Amino acid sequence: MILALPLPRPLLRWLRVTVSGSSAPVREPGTPDRPPAINELYHARRLHLVRLAVLMVDDLGTAEDIVQDVFAALYRRHGADLRSVADPDAYLTCGVMNAARSALRRRRTARAYVPPPPGAAPAAEDQMLKGEGDREVLAALERLTVRQRQVMVLRYWSDLSEQEIADVLHVSRGTVKSTAHRALALLRGLLGDRP
Amino acid sequence: MSAVERRLRAALAARASAVTAHDLQPALPPTAMGRRRPVPSAWRIPGWRRLLAAGAALAVAAGAVAISSDESGPRRTPEAPAATVPAPSDRPTTVPVPAPSPTLTPTAPGPEPTPSGSQVSAPKGTPPETASGEVPAPATPGAASRPAGSPGATSEPVGAPVPTPPGSFG
Image 1 (cartoon, rainbow over the protein chains, first blue to last red):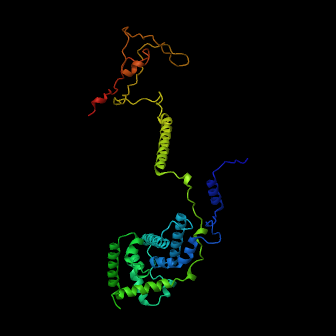
Image 2 (cartoon, each protein chain N blue to C red):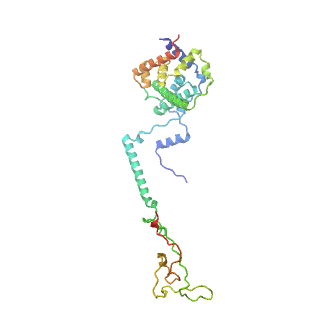
Image 3 (tube, rainbow over the protein chains, first blue to last red):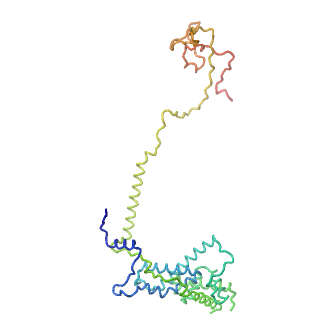
């Protein structure tokens, strides 16, 4: 016996998508051949965002997961056309920074219980670095707090201004300035301020 | 720009350039990962109505729990103990003092022995006759419940220790 219940059309569509497990890409009505805007943004900005995440978490796999999750969250929240997002690039940068901060917090909690084995071999990416000086700087960067590291990366790699960093991190400009000052002082102490 | 800033900039650039497009996993655009569609506007419930609905649901659930607890309340009360179980009394329990067992006195006239050797007692309710014709008092309180006509119930045993009341201890 088959029961047929009259369901509203949105519920039927949602059930069909849930059962099939796939959803067709949302396209603009007037542009059937044009890929969604979020896909273009994904292909254009993915590598840059993965590099930004790598500078924060020092792990390529984690960085890729972070970027993928940020794009998925953007798609779930704003759809494919991104018409409701004023600055998608800033949105993605902010999302990557927040996700990297969460990942570092989880990692530090895990390392508090399980210390890393002594004498671990450096990763392949570390072998590709140009010199010993770069490794020393990156090791000193790991000793900063998460907020200080965010400010350093956004300022000296992304070349953002203090106000732009403040907007991304949702803090005041004075906080960015003082955080950068303290971080540079710590790095000078760790690196010896040699040329 | 100080030396530390230059070194920092160079190290960050070197670390970032170590990640190339070939190192990344195959790209999976977000539109291929599925998306939770937004709720249609006709199905959207305002905030205060949502709170009202949640409050009503909580009230219904609390009422159901209260009703179910009232129905199952008397079942959880234990039943009264049976009449055969003695109720605890407030008075201190006293150890009953054993009464000396009566001894048979051959002087008292008894019934004739039966051929089988067993003694036949007098019928209940008939006071035994003594030599003085009086009804003997029971020797012990415990003996009062016995039939008055039991043989040898009128005299105490000779040389038996006199029982002392429990209150004499200490």
